[in-house]
Length: 559
Image 1: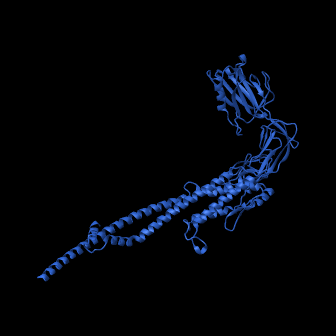
Image 2 (image 1 turned 30 degrees about the vertical axis):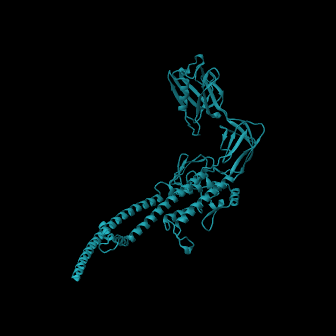
Image 3 (image 1 turned 120 degrees about the vertical axis):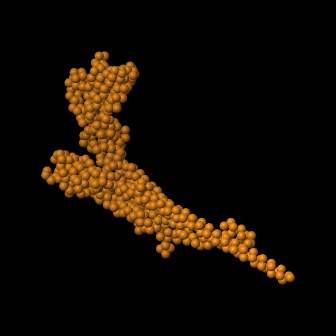
C-alpha cells in the first residue's frame, strides 16, 4: 500500500490515486454485507433493549398487583361510640355486612398470673430440681392441702431442669426457651418474667388469657422446698406460689345476647371484623360499620392505569409502521414478535376471566366497574363499583382476597393441593354410606373426607358427626390470577429471558461474521495493493523507457 501511494504521489507510474481506487473497489465488494451486518446488529440490539424495557414494566405491574393484594381493603370501616371501651376494626380478609349493634362489657379476659418465692437479687440461686407447667381449668384457687381439681386443656405441658448454680434469671430464661405455642394461636402458652416489689425479686408466670388456660405448677427437689416459704408448687396438693390474677374469660352482651371469650380480641363475632374489648362499661355503647370505598377506588384505579401503561408499551413495540394504516414511518422493535402477542392476549383475557369460589359468584371484572374500551384500554366506573358493592360486597373480595372457607359450623378445610385443587364452590353431602365433594365421590376416614380426582382433587375436609351437608368456597382473587399471569413473564429464566439470551447469542454470531468480513476485506485490500503496485511498477518502467526513447530521438534530430 505504501509503495502504491508513493508511486502515485510522486507522479511516477499511472498517476492514479490507487489508494482511493482500491478502497472503492473493496467497498463495492463488501458494502452489501457490511450494511446487512450493521442492520442486523442494530435490529438485534433494539430487540434486546425492548425486551428489557418490557420485562421491567411487567415487573413494576406485578409489584403494584402484589402491593394492592397486601392492602387488606374490605370496603368497610368499623366504628365505636366509645373507643375507650371497645374498638371495631375491619380485618379485610372477608366481606362484612352492615353492623349496628349495642355492646356492654361486663368482664375483661385476664391471664392466670402466679409469683414464686422472693429473692434479694436476680443472681440468687434457686437450687437443683425441676418444674413442670400444665394448662387447663382450676375448680378453685388451690391452697396448701386444698385438693382442688385441675382439668387439662389441649396445650402441652412444659418442663425445665435446674442445677445448684441456676440463678433466678436463668430460671426465667429456661422457662421462656421451653415455652411453645402448642395451640397454634400465635401466642406462647406461658411467659416468665422477673418483678421487683421494692424489696425483693420474684419469678412471675403468666398464661394466655381465659379461664381454660390456668396453670398447674409442680416442682421437685430444691425447687419444692417449703422451708422459709421457698417453693414453686402450685397444684392440688401444695400451693406455695401466689396467685395474683386468676384466669378469666371476657363476658359481654351484644344486642341482648350474653357471650364469653377467652380473649379480649374477638375475631369470630362479626364476619370480617375484629372487636377489641378495652374496658368494662355499665351503659351500652354502639359498634357499627359503614361503607368506605375511597381506598378501594384508588387501588382499582392504580391497577387500571398500570395495565393501560403496559398495554400501550406493547402496542408501541409491536407497531407495524405502516403509514397507510395510521402508523409511524418506523416499525416497533418487536413488530411481529409472537411472544408479545401472547402477553397481550393473556392480559386482555384477564378482563373476561371468570372468578369462581366466592358466594354468589362467579364474578367478572366488569361487575366491579372495570370496563374494556374499544381500543383495548380499561376504565373504572366508580358509580358502577359503588352499586355493585351495595348489592354484594363479596364482589370486592373476589377482586382483592383469596379465600378458603365453609358456610357450615362443623365443616373445616384440613388441606388442599395448590397445584391440583381448582378454585370453585364445592358442595359436601353424605348420607352415611355415600359421600361427595363437588359431585366427586369422597373417601371417608374417621371424620376426614377427601377426594383424589376432578376439580376438588386434593381437598380434605374435617366434618363433625351429624353434619350431612355444606359448601366449601375456594376462591383465587382476580389479583392472584393477574399475579400468576404476569409472573410467568417476569420470573427468572422466563420466556422473555430466553429471547434476550437468544438476541445476545445473535450479537455474538454477528460479531464473528464481522471479524470474518474484516479479515476478507484485509486480504482483498492486500491483493489489490499488490496488483496495483505491480501495475505501477510496470507503468513506471514503460514511462522511463519512453522518456529515454524520446530523449534519444531528440538528440538524433539535433544531429
